[in-house]
Length: 244
Image (cartoon, rainbow, N blue to C red; front, side):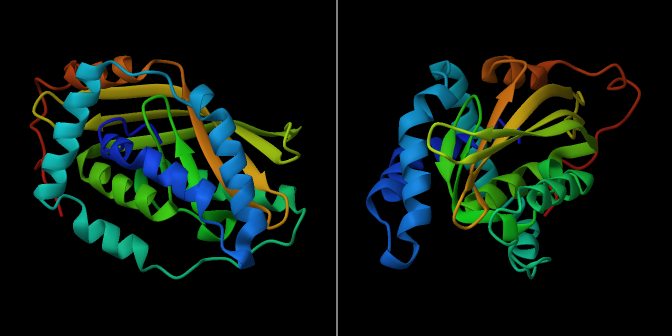
């Protein structure tokens, strides 16, 4: 999800998360964790581009301010306590997993933070052009910070396809999408990003172990969209900035 101003705090813990994925594999889940660790360590440099330090600093300050104000706390607690919607898929059922990804898009998981937990490894590695971190729970926490600011959000799934196996023998699925939303700020900026997400699956559990986004703009360009007033900003009053 292109939530460039809520993921940055995870950057502080990214190295620790990757080290945890590499070094701490319990015997019961060793195979699955090894896939996460191996793929994450070998490709993290490709998944991330060095971000402008000023951009990173701005994002970090904004994120920590939102956390201190308790923005999204109730939203996160509601999402985190929802029971699983589906049972895990059988091994090898990539078509079934793709259908569940489509179902998540139909529920706009990018802008709600609600996804099908049954298709994700709990320590799934998430990356976009600005940050990388591990953990579905942290992803939900970050999205909960963003949701109160979204006005008329829409996520269009433009296509989804199976790419086959990568060099590590893991199946990869690619989804292409477009995100548009106004932000509940006085100048009501319009965020408009086209991008793609590649989902890498653990062949043993048929769960997603990598969720890596690429955008049509850089992280800095995406951040700058926040400071451009939309055409309707002069005629529409801003909604309350902080909803819990």
